[in-house]
Image 1 (cartoon, rainbow, N blue to C red):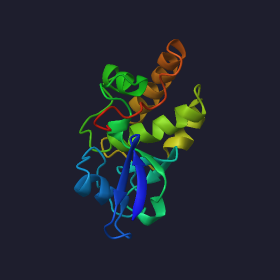
Image 2 (cartoon, rainbow, N blue to C red; image 1 turned 45 degrees about the vertical axis):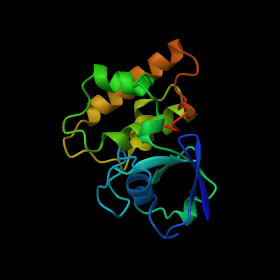
Image 3 (tube, rainbow, N blue to C red; image 1 turned 180 degrees about the horizontal axis):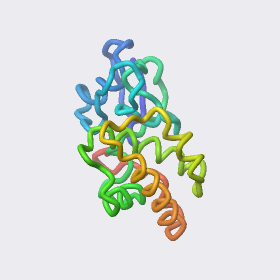
Length: 167
C-alpha cells in the first residue's frame, strides 16, 4: 500500500508500484490537468510538485512518491485566484495551452522559494519546460506579474489546502 497526499487529501494506492505518478493522477484519481507530453521527463508538460519540488510525473513511479505530498494544477487554487493563474489569464499567456499546467507548476515552485525572481532566476527555473508555441516571453512576464500580485496579497503564492472534496 502506497500512501500519498495529493492536493492536501490523503490517498492510498494498492496498484502497481511502478506506475508513473502521471497515470495514477489521471487514470486512478481522474485529475486530468497534468498532461502527458513526451513520456521521458524532457518536456515538462507533466510537472507536478512533490514535496514542493517540480517533478516530472511521467518518470516518477508511485513507489518513488510514497509518503510524499503532491500538488497538481488542480491544487494550485480551487477557483483560479492564485496570482500565477490571474497573471496567466491577464497576459494571455497560453496559445494552445497544452504545456501550461506544467509551466504553472514550475513557476509556482519558483515563487514559493523566490517571491521576487530576476529574469535569470525565471529562465533557470523554467528551463526544461518546453512550449511549442513559443510563449516564453509571456510566461516570464506573467511570473513577474504574479510576483507583484503576491506582494500585494501575502500568502497568496502558496497552494491551497484541500477542501471537503480534496481538490
